[in-house]
Image: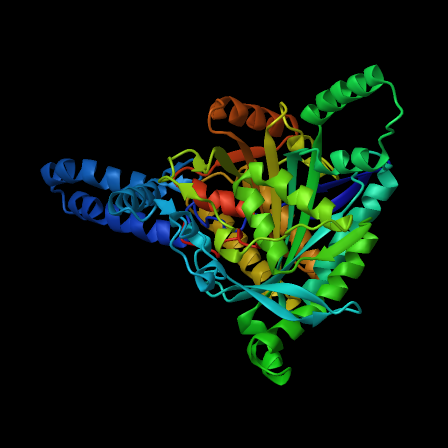
Amino acid sequence: MSTAASGRDRVYSGWRRERYGWFMGLTGWQAVLSGAALMPLLLAVSNGVWLLALKIAPASAVGVLLVALPVRGRPSVRWLVDLYLYLWGRVMGWSRWRSRASTGLTTRRELATLDLPGVIAGLRLHDGPPFGPMLQRVCVIHDPRSGQWASVAQISHPGLGAVDEATRNAFADQLGALLAAAARGEQVSRISILVRTVPDDGAERAAWVADHVSTHAPGIVRDISRQLEQAVVAAAVRHEVYVTVGVSEGRIRRTAQQAGGGLEGRARVLYRHLQEVENHLRGLGVTGVRWLHTEDVAAAIRTGYNLAETPALEQAKQEQARGLPTLTGLPLGVAGPVTAPPPAPRSYTHDAFTTVSYTLLLPELPTRVGSLARMLAPAEPGERRTLALHYEPQNPASAGRQVERDVWTAEMAAEVRRTRGFRVGQAHRRREAEIAVHESQVVAGHTMVRVAGAVAVTVPSSWPVEDHAANLEATARACQFRLLRLELAQDSGFVAACLPLGVGLPSRSWG
């Protein structure tokens, strides 16, 4: 990514695609498989066996189309594989979900164990050692599949709507400094920022009113105030902002052994980065940072799946803050959904709500700071929108090697096209210019960051979810972004877009 100034406005452009095709848009494996599909046809033509060539031509054409033809972001053969896995999972019942707690037969030990569906079924939540001057217990999230250890903070930020352009640019610079520091440390594997715009439950307002209401006010005044309050709360929304910091097991194993080994050793290594991240967040305008303990993370997961649980949890917090006898927090065993039927191809139903998830495609045109804010505004009361940005900083050495590969691939692709008589078009020239900019930035000491965005809209299952999905897509187009619906993977998309667990940036795959 590169930046440029236009007057006082700073724009961001030069997004780098993660995978380029070196010839006619084909990656290496696509070129090899396409060549294998065409080889029998070429051999028949070279030997002059024209009748055999006519028989082989349809099969070769189908093979090339399956490998090389992209359909909504995936090659056709990848669609066939994904469809097979999706249907096989439904037939075998693997995608149907019911929590153990809903059966009523769970033991106390089982309630203390995380019970989640899908790609996060293997997650483990641990109470880490005391952290910070207040010696608070911070939840350490372990993902054995990816080898990541992470912690989550809930932050308070005034937003970007009321700040000037200079302040926005300063926030952008601070975010860049945060990612650059993480890259230089070479231990932070992922930083995720998740924003959830949820309907206001009114619990905090109700607690404040109960503390300040005057018993001497006339009845008509109280009635009018109550009616106005109901109308305002029904249309009000609030923002939940989470930051997840993860470190890789492969990068911290030796340091963790020196810190004591085991869970505590890995948690202490993770804690060394939490304070640094918190300092950078303060520079981003954050007014409050609260690292969540295990019960708080369980509550964030639960409210991600079921919006109706939020009022009861918030009311318990307000009662606890006022010294009233109450019970706060959630056991880990009830953090997930109660039930979830097999995911539909284009949506995901969890409890009484339905979510449609998208991946956020980076735009071709330059964008400005805060351009994603409109996507978080609900179309109507009761709708929830979420936006998650997953950053994976690359250390400078890895970034340098990646740029060298990009330069070689671009030069090779241009040379092949020229020698074969193909025209080098505008897209290829723009790509060469972007790679040149990236090379100059790496030489100047900067690094590169993998970034993936996920967006989702959640409504009650009785609502027309497709209408709300269309509204979200229209808003994205107005923001000059494109959304790609995560068909056949809506349950995984929900995790990436709606849950602050740092799960969402996939490894580089063959698709």
